[in-house]
Image (cartoon, rainbow, N blue to C red):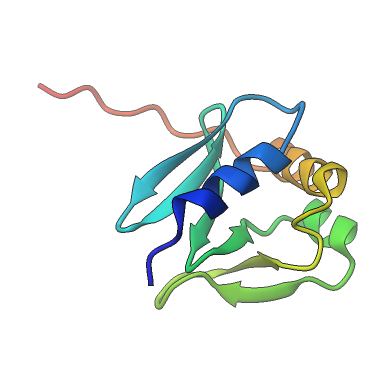
Length: 108
């Protein structure tokens, strides 16, 4: 089941004051970015955040599941998705602890 655009828009609206948040359609679902960093995905109307040690400390006992078959486990965010401050803090912590994206190779 593909994610609903209304859910994607809701998630983006919840994340505030940490950079430019955007969603890009990927294989029928959505990658969620802060500026140029991919920090999570939305699959089947569920938000998954890339795991980091600091994010795990912030959450406490996160639910970790793969977003789709063959994916590495990520933090499944359910109960606090409507808590804008909490979600924004988690995304900020996550983005700060992810490596910078590798530069794209120029096409010839």
